[in-house]
Length: 258
Image 1 (cartoon, rainbow, N blue to C red):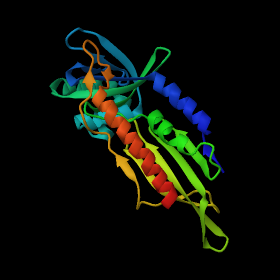
Image 2 (cartoon, one colour; image 1 turned 120 degrees about the vertical axis):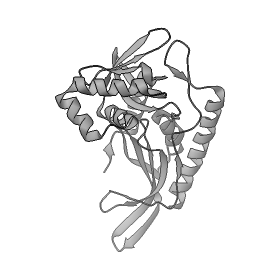
Image 3 (cartoon, rainbow, N blue to C red; image 1 turned 90 degrees about the horizontal axis):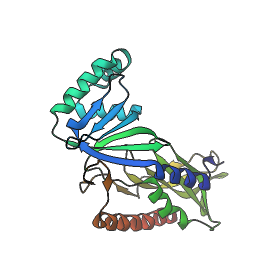
């Protein structure tokens, strides 16, 4: 039984998110948490421009990690004394000689900061992963996307190969497949793993003996002058294209040899 979104529904949501993404890079000294404990602000130290965002729980967890504030203490301050949290966070940001990337989604003027990451974080977007791999299986009856979903933190796509089927015991069959996952907000690398899909329970069992991972680190992203927005240069685009081609090859190898 299929779960999550349909393939078309998944792609529609990925396109919607892609159009809403805005990435910013700025120095820690230009970052500030408001006294409500939730609103976050980026201030450009040279021209005074600012960007204001709502926030997510993951964003706050990453602030706590970056500033080495214990998570439980962070949560208590946010709930009971948000102005104290703001003073702590802003004081540590002011002392920190580092740049960070803020990944955000912006819908109709509503901005939400969803991740605070290293300035060297290498963006690998969910839409790129989906458009590189899903066409491999389109129009081929032997393959089926049995599950796909994108959440606030992860993308996953589960595909089975109906032609590669065997019985574990009489009446208990498994099919070969592949699971593709990604996180745009720092919770994991791109992952391609072979799958044993058990028909009796439709859950699937992941096999870890084959697969490819691409960790989200690498060349420092560049910031456009007078703003925090990030662009990708030709070299990075070429590297990403090479990686996506390798991803396609690895995906096919995984689903054909599980």
